[in-house]
Image: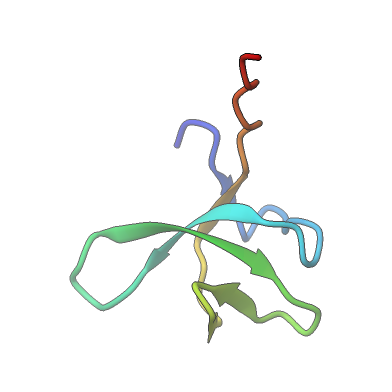
Length: 67
């Protein structure tokens, strides 16, 4: 998976926003969302605590604002 890091390989820093890919419900395609890893192993994704995240990647840099 291009740019994706498996949570089996390594985890991001705690409380640092990242992009996550997770299975929302069995049989459905993976969802791509923004979230962060909390101390204790739970992820916070859109205000909800979740346990199962399969992949993550760093957030992209924001665009430079033209002045």
